[in-house]
Amino acid sequence: MGKHALIRNYVLLGILSMLFVAACSTAERSEEKSQDYAAALTNSERPDTERSLDPTRKPSEVLAFYGVKEG
Image (tube, rainbow, N blue to C red; front, side, top):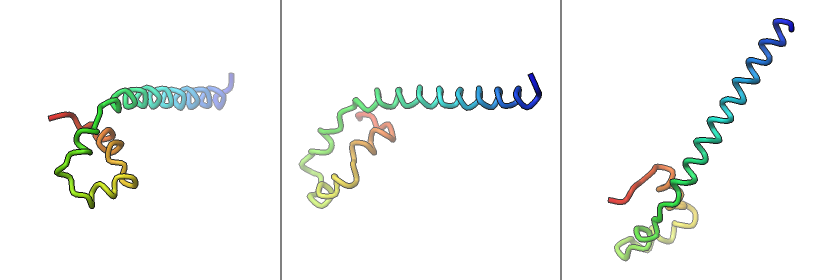
């Protein structure tokens, strides 16, 4: 096997390793998204102006992304 083929194989192995790690971290995040933020988002103390922006701001997705926990 030539030197260039060996380098190419190592690069391919590195890329595949990074893809595997990225897939694993994505799977963890999707499990964390199971947190229910409905109680906070439907709180009567939230202003109507904030609620009207919810469809574009997607607050439940943002809260899940940052990993906000109850309490």
